[in-house]
Image (cartoon, rainbow, N blue to C red; front, top):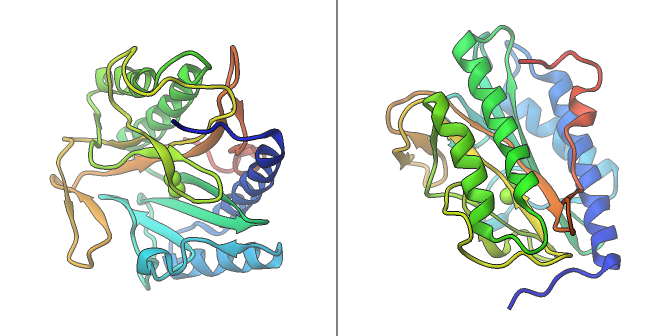
Length: 259
Ligand code: MG
Ligand code: MG
């Protein structure tokens, strides 16, 4: 039995969601060829702390940074490093906050400089698949409807859905039940109830779905070395239409980041 959030709890989740959304926009402003992923981490951590919140990823199960910075064939959980971003790369930035006892968690994949047409398509389709998932997340539907919406949108483009990682509930803990897979069958799984707070986060590979864990024990990479994209938003299940708590509007409003 998953307890839906109260409106008071949702208000606190909304504050976190806005903060992670703005943090991603700050990171987006500095993404460019020649910038290290450590610098992206510094920008995010500074912004989060300046806003009175705690970067929740730092120290989470031993994770060493405030953001995950996952470049190209790294799907998720990349460590920020001295790697300098190159023209044509993509970098997925995932960030979490802990503020007033509740959590925020969102991710965006940024193009670096000019990316090729196939990569633009991967970013566009992955982000759109997240919105398809959100459309399916209405009261009375089931978890499988979300995964089905993502998968059935993505696969006709020849892209594949990562199976080993999934979205999740969110609240006082960053990861709560239910798990939210990005593949599935309609009408299956946990029933969605008004007030459930969920992070929907498709991880979509340009090539095959096979992945492997890197030697650092964290980074998850594509087996075929092709690129992977990741977009994540936090929503609340409502009747008729989900309420989006986090947003990409802060990132995209000035039109500089487009694909
Ligand atoms: Mg995340
Ligand atoms: Mg998440």
